[in-house]
Image (cartoon, rainbow, N blue to C red):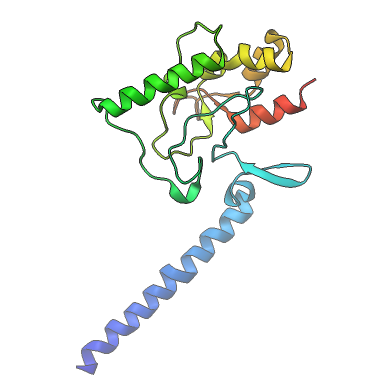
Length: 190
């Protein structure tokens, strides 16, 4: 019996050493050398202190800021440890009621805005952590932010355009705006 058990134990230990220690160490080393910012969470710092990641959304509720996609993580929004599928199916009446309430909340926050509400402002992302909104969602909020901050809307439109990221490699995904980066630039604006 030991004759059969010994090769199995040795194989287990070697594979554990290889896949549990050597490979992760190698990948971590390469990533730290080649892409240190991304390997460390794509952190965004202000005055030398990390204030967020460009990969995880943050909760902005103040009308002077652009608002991101909704987060259904609990017990608080944008809780990375609680990320999971959060969207209801398209035929679920609860989704219809939730979207209807969200549209009304956006209308109440900016009563003069008669534009169509972009879908990404009233639906949650699958992970609940999406840091981006569409350019249309930023455009929808532009008048409110300009009015509250007393900024010329044309200047604010140029700032949004500056922070609009194009498709990755020119073909993947859709144009998008990182809400944290835009709001930080907005705080530094003037």
